[in-house]
Each structure stands twice: as structure tokens, then as C-alpha cells.
Image (cartoon, rainbow, N blue to C red; front, side, top):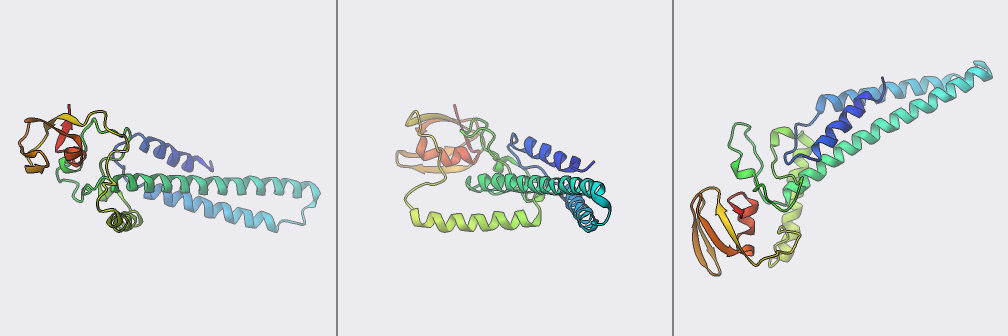
Length: 215
């Protein structure tokens, strides 16, 4: 039935909103919906040409034409909603300044933010293999745009938490080795399972990148 494919796509989009990782692009499903729109458009053109079948049949044709146009419009809106949601999820990830996963067999530890990160349902993992070509180009262009914008505010961390900290200093645990970190109050080494009491603003980026977790 017309509209079933678009409904399936919207259900996938709804599921995506609650995921921290962007799933595989539904390329085949999108192509099937586009084909359905094209078929509906042909039906609409045929109905528009039927003008000599009498008043009763004309009313039936007009009703069918109306429903056909509604079906096409609904399919288009579902496609646009799906594409917009994925674009917004890609943009969310871009603001975290984390490298995406290029190799599906590679370790994902460097792309995962600690579980207690401030944003719920936020896109914290991104695999380039799950994007289509247009989304990859959008991701690269968005990153370039961000770098250009941030260059005008070099003294401000525009990628930091949107919520003000409740405590200036926090306890953190090291999740993976990462070498020496220099701060205004001294330096410390990122050795797995070690704990530190540090100023949150000094380690905020390390928390986002998955090296530390706040206790």
C-alpha cells in the first residue's frame, strides 16, 4: 500500500533519535520511496487527462487525484524529515571534535564519550561507513565551517558544555592511557584507572574524548 515504505522510514528515524550512534543510511528504502513517488506522479498525470468520462466519473477521478497528490506530498515530507534528522545528528557529532570511525574493524574507544556525558541521546559515535556520499560531504563541509567560525573566537571554547558546572573542581577516573596533561595547576599523567581531583574546565575536552569520566 502507498505510504507503507515512508512509514517504515519514519519509524527508523524515530529509533535513531534515541541512539548515540548514527545507524546505516537506508539507501535502498529511500530509492523505493522515490520510485513510489514517481509512480504516483504518473498516476496523477493520467487522471488529469481524463476529462471526457461524464460528471460522475470526473468526480471520482478528482477524488483519486486528490488522494494521489496527498500520498506524494506525504512521501516527500517523510524523506525530508529523515534527511534532516540525520543531518542534525551529523552536526551534533561535529561539535564534539572527535574523529569519526573510518574502519568498521577499528577500535571505537577513541570515538566514544563517557556514559555520564551531559547530553542525553546525543550523537557521540559516528562511523563514516554508515553515511552516504552526500552526508560525508556535508560532514566535511560542516567541519570546515566550524573551524572558520571558531577562528574568530580563539579565546572561547565553543565546544564546551552548554550547562554551567555545579563544581569548579571534580573527581575524575582515567579510562585509558593518554600521556601527560599540562594544566594551570600542574601536570598529571593519564594512566588507566588512576584518579585525580582537577578543575573541570581543564579536563572537559578529555571527558568528551573518552579519556576521563567524572565520578
